[in-house]
Image 1 (cartoon, protein in one colour):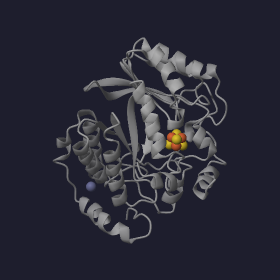
Image 2: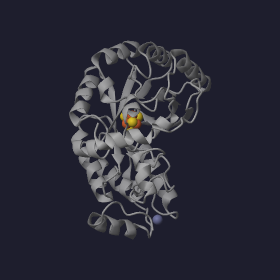
Image 3: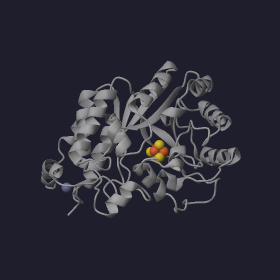
Image 4: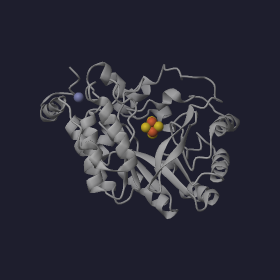
Length: 343
Ligand code: SF4
Ligand SMILES: [Zn+2]
């Protein structure tokens, strides 16, 4: 295990999961999303599982999802109880998004029998179901089984590629897979006509703001022909992570919203046929992507609008005095050591 992996592993040594009840769903709610080029209500379910197998080993440097996991066995019955809780609140939305704070296709988290039960039930009402998985669990066997249950409905798998750059993924993120692994998984998904959503991280630790901007755009260039959706994830500072460790020592700042707007505009230009989105967790706060207090709200609102409507015009009237600071930062950060924090 390399030093970065060891460090990420040590950070989790003494943490306590947020809850010890394996029957308790992390959450479920309804939100707007896009289905067949139309804005619809989508139902979100976040299951509480044992945890991402990769996080149990060492984990990605920016990921604190394990704080919501059990870190202990969650039985098939527990998971189905969680599913019942969600179904009691479900009101027939045509688009359902499932998260596990890990990989829905990993048998260690969700056994095949449970997966089948959940998907068969949802197939009765939903037109599209979206899940997430690391590439190693995207196998012929699993995808063909799922497609059997899902037949003509749309099934989507989201993969956290984060960046097309193998060095950044390995040395900054400890992601544990390569761009080739991602491409191999994509091939399997295509074989069964499964839709692909690719997550790209904005501002991995150890990259400057400008490097991160360029990295995100390069990644779009490399995947624009193979992905159906790109979802940008601006890093937010989550507890018990390497990013948190750096942030507490003033060696990391989450991305500026100006950078995100630039990335979204450029991506739409490069990949007009791909659905481009961005979910900003903790936006406007010091742990999330932010500009200044005067303009955070309007930038976040514009990014949300763009994610639904795909129209870059939403950005055209935005401005704020703090933009000069961001432009200066893009110029000088490369000359400093580490990231420049808010003053
Ligand atoms: S980012 Fe994904 S793969 Fe990495 S530790 Fe978190 S849940 Fe696991
Ligand atoms: Zn501002």
